[in-house]
Image (cartoon, rainbow, N blue to C red; front, side):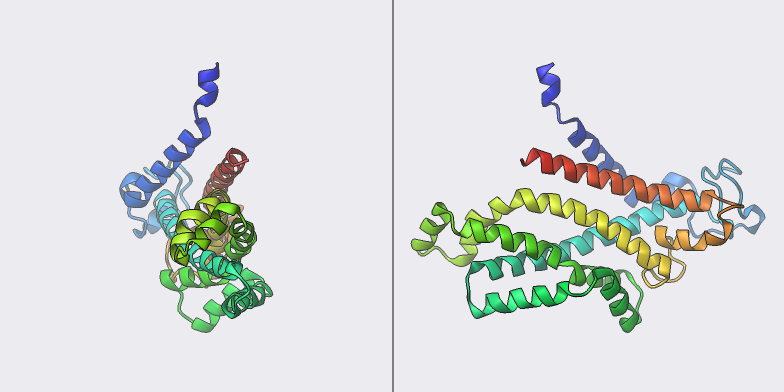
Length: 270
């Protein structure tokens, strides 16, 4: 029984889920057996399990499963990239602001407060609308730039206490360079909190990207994304409910998995 308790069941399941997502991202269309762009008006709005279409077809006769798998590739890539940008910027700003009372630290704190004054989603919508360029790099850069304060707040609060610990003060008194001090003595203490925050932020970026695509200002027109699929299915919720249920359930599944992993990491770090 004790051996079974030591088996990280949830960790194994999450690793398997990540492997499945990776395979889907690489071999999306091949797994469904259909091209997500191929249209067949003779089979438009076909229900699931009709004509070799496992999840049916949409209003243009496109395979729903193929579009769903392609949407996973877009959503995961966007969420991971935006999370990485927010992580790098937020961690850097938080560390510099926590380092001391220098003028640069004050500017970092002021910039973080200013950015937090605006709701991230509203700010993202405004930036993308002003840019007028809906595309992968635009949405990734925008989401990363408007959400980095999420990381800077946590890093700032925890780094302040880490800088006051005896082993960090001792290393600083020996004349250790600031970069080396960060890497060897501060960042390791931030890893538990940052690992949890990265997972939860990834889930938030999935929702944000889908919301932008739903509004038509995220992915390029005609791209197979979950938000766009939900938007296109609004007129067929009663006559073809599978068009709405498929992307909605896929989104719920990946968000629940991400939150389960985040909760597992949080409990493990206590």
